[in-house]
Amino acid sequence: MDTIFIGDPIVTNKNFDGGAGLKGVVHTINDQDVKEPGYGIKFLDKKKVSEGLAKSKKEIAGEKLKLHKADSNTIKENLCYYLGRKQFEHTPAYEDKDKNKQKFVCNIRQLRVEDKEEIPNDIRKSRESIKSCQSEVEYLGVRRIEYLQSIYKIEKDIVQTQEEYKAEIDISDIINQYEKLLKNKNIHSVSMETRQSNKREYIIIKTKSLEYTAQDGTKFDTGAFIFYIPFDFKNLPIAANYKKHFLRGTYHHPCIKADGDICMGGSVKEQIRGYMNYKDLLGIVFTLIAFLKKPDYRKPYVDDEEFEHAQKATIKPKDVFNYLNRTYWTDHEKWDSDKYKKAMDKARNPNRHNPQAPDQEQVMRIINETPLDGAVDTGGNVPIEDIPESVGNNGEELIA
Image (cartoon, rainbow, N blue to C red):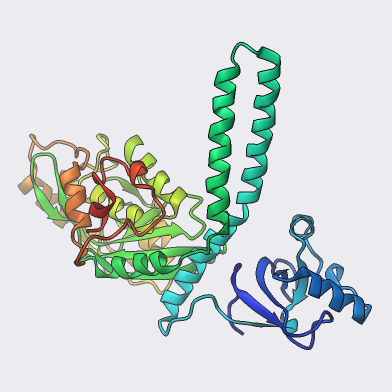
């Protein structure tokens, strides 16, 4: 059976008591701890649905679906009806012969639909702020002008937000993000995988081999990496090296531990968080690549002169998440201590320093390795004025 995402359009069939041919969109999906998933449908014409149900003299058996309390409240607040899968026909919001690409676009689109559904709550909170300001105006008097200015600004923001809520969600930039990633010469592949240990879905970005630059100018192949980016964008990405290893995966990079934790330093971490908030995959990936080529953290887990002699990885686990499994490395990989000692004795340099932050020129060099013609936008929703200076001076430069 086809995969259904929040925001997908549906049309009821003859199995729905309210009648066939009624159009709506999927608002809520309840597939936890139930034999058959239930779908909260937000109908375009609620009056017709009510009339159809009245004629049939039947109610939708929502209780039989064992709804979670939160789901029940969501359905009630949004005037949705809960339907079983057999009561409607479903058409994906986006289809592509490349099923991996289709899944990517539909998942990102679902996140945007969920964000959009929060807008009414944001507007309600803004109106409450206006009431609070109005109360303060009446109470203080002296600061009346300041509060009136605050009210004016909030009201202006509400108008803009309402326009955003009315607008249709544009998936063209999501498609562009996927395609532009694959065109970048540093990227090997993009896929979606589920981690069995926590049942969470991740965007898996595999890079090609990256050249590392130390502060003293020394350059060497630091291996190729896998970025594990949570599809809900709620946690920072983690990474693993699938071509080189240091002491059987103890470290994947001077700044990446065995469990994939990336020690980015404050500025890069905040930069990544900003892109996560906007669900801007291009910004996340290009910033990570720039960082791994030239980190900004002054106290790495392993000195660059040691990692320069990391050894070729031979493991090729079927489960991509096993690259983050220290035990898997220990059981299946080898480390040639004698080879490492000889290399270190030969190449040890007392004047080597720890890596510094990637400058803007380097970041732009990574970004510009996407061979595209013409000026393009950021591939995400990041307002031009919000793009960090360390990534570019304007939106066009981000993935030029």
